[in-house]
Image (cartoon, rainbow, N blue to C red; front, side, top):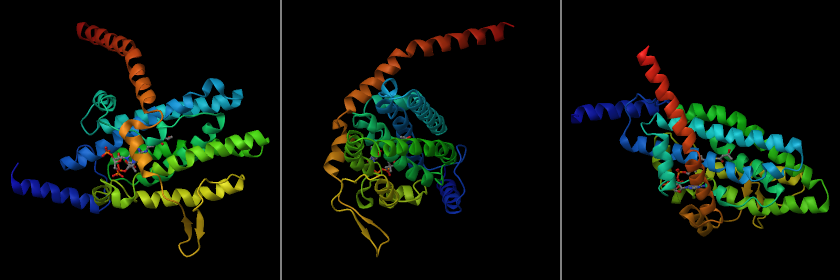
Length: 316
Ligand code: 3HC
């Protein structure tokens, strides 16, 4: 491609981003933009699917049929979110198989939060309230991302996430207003899930490898720290309302900033978890690999059935 043609294409891309027009699959885009969108979307899709494991672990142990049906609905939603995102990511010219192969080879990440164990029923409340709550803050912002298919997938996902967050908070509210043991279980879950939820927003802006470029491309519309602060500011009053204490001795309302000051995240823990050394990393990936292998016969049967239908159509 000639230099001037490349420059023209780049100028057209830049103008579209500047004008807040969405970049669509058929539009020309710089290779590094395509690579970064695929990186983030595929990891987002992996997160949705792997995130089914800690909650799926409690479907057979939910305390009532009512809770069981709600949890089943939520876990099914997460599977659907994964499928939307894999389909949206495939518009970038890669296949679901390639994305999943990268995950299994340790070349692609998924959200750090899902490498923590779900030890009690209160964890299901904390996951809905805090993890889905954090995901909503991030995903509402991503509804304005510059890559069209990603932005549109977010609109549908955000609608379902709101139900996820409400049902989790309601579980925590019931426990916090229950017996002493139930309140202690809810507080224990908050103690264990609070800091890993703050890690979901990624490193501080100054340490973020991708933020500068992602913001320039309007792939990322608000910074990691901005979204993290928004999550903290909206969640503290919710904890106070149900009488739970956020495990951060440095937490303090800052009148001047109109926001909460809060303590420092354990970035060593964060780096360990995203490098594969978290409490459940091996378990999560082994489970995902086994599920793919155990489901191979279904994919083979579907492919054989499709092949037979195609042959019949051609013979007709
Ligand atoms: N978990 C795992 N890896 C993380 C991470 C986290 N919480 N935060 C950052 N990282 C990784 C990044 O992927 C990047 O590594 P890479 O180059 O190998 O991809 C590295 O750390 C540097 O971080 P950056 O901040 O520079 O990376 P990003 O600009 O991509 O920002 C992000 C990180 C904010 C997570 C961004 O990728 C994003 O917004 N992703 C989409 C949202 C998402 O993936 N959410 C996952 C949760 S899904 C969910 O919660 C399901 C819900 O229904 C329960």
